[in-house]
Amino acid sequence: MKKVFIYRNDLKKSRVIADELREKLALKGIAVSEELTGDVDLIINVGGDGTFLSLMQNFEFPTVRVAGINTGHLGFFQEIAPEETDRLIDAYLNDELCSQKYNIVKAEITRKNGEVVAYRALNEFVLKGKGTRPIHLDIGINDSFIEKFSGDGIIVSTPAGSTAYNYSLGGSIVDPRLNLLQVAPMAPMNTTAYRSLTSSFLIPAEDQVIIKPADSKNRDLTMLYDGRELRLRDISSISFRLSNRKINLVRFGDTPFWDKVKNKFL
Image (cartoon, rainbow, N blue to C red; front, side):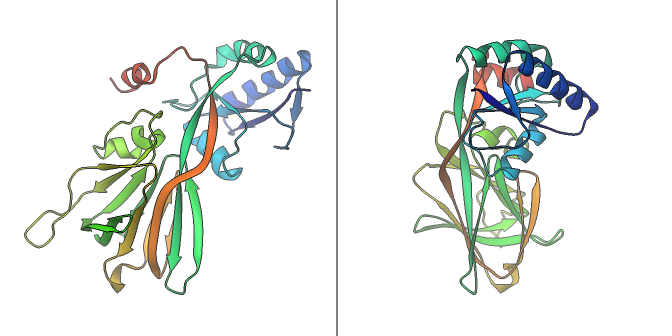
């Protein structure tokens, strides 16, 4: 038996659409679960891209297919319009749903005492210093030292996140079919005293970015990931790599990625 889990934000429009969905699904004989159980084979997310990121974080990036009904603004993940719910349900019933896999970036944080904790993000991780102070970081790729960065911070993004914060920093837009990470500087210093790369750079899927505080004064950091904030203390190093886990986002297949970029940004 087909089983759906509906996740939404608290906007009135989202509540109305979610209620209508439950009625339509029930009429089609599709069970709606109140929890994300193991027998759920489709998640319907009602909201904007922020709601989608919340779903991913709250449920630890479920691999079951997710269909996003957009009640927000930009709608890069939430590309199904509210008036297309009947089409979504029919495609689901007829086993005609297509999905696209999206990479996740994983951060492993090592503290001076040896403790290691891990976090995942769909869009990006951002590292900044305390308050408005500039930050000084040693950045490497695998075992190779690249630069001593000085500036406001560093952002490590996936192709999915390349159109988010990364784009506002002047980073490259990356087709989500590519497996790579992008590292973009935030207000890099480039003077006779400090020399930092001023453009973003891309690394392949099998490599990892390793960031270390340049000195003891830079061991306390602020990390932002998919809209969440975390204060890090006494950091020894942070490594970023693509996770083996991928999410499956339902696509109707009508709009190629670059057409969507054109429609959203131009």
